[in-house]
Length: 245
Image (cartoon, rainbow, N blue to C red; front, top):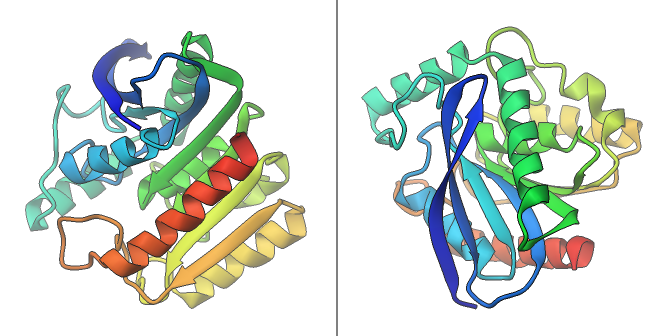
């Protein structure tokens, strides 16, 4: 389906947070998705992913995750210098600040006239996959799609150590985890820890592993794998439709 695109201004802790909003063009009410980028923020590869989700009939809200540190509209280039900058931004952001952003976007989605407030999910990539998983700790999130999420097994997220793994029992929604088998950031040992923790916490979940590398769904890099990405998209859209529609 065709979509519309616009930018929304939210204020969190007196910081301007740009939220990229992609939504179906056809008038109606749709499930909402809190959509998290990787460390490079809202460049073309990420907004194209958000647009694709919206085209399946969802209102997608993607915040700039480093709005406290970067000027509004900043896109970090995915090169060596950009990687340093993005990782440093991630390191300097308090975990409670990530949580505050999550709450703000959820409340925004619930207040939108085009969103069904009882049907909100989260989705994210890399650090955004961890943020999408962490968002599921909140009662309003009915489903979470976490694509190659970093730091869940190690506690690495921002300043300090994230307690995401220890709080898995708080998740009441359903979770879909997408991994690449060649991902150095979430190796087999890390995936095993996550799977065991989910099982012990009694979280309704599905874990899918593709013969692919980290960021294999990002279409501008050498790790991009179109075939694996297409397979993942089929599973993602099926999962979201089953849980939210």
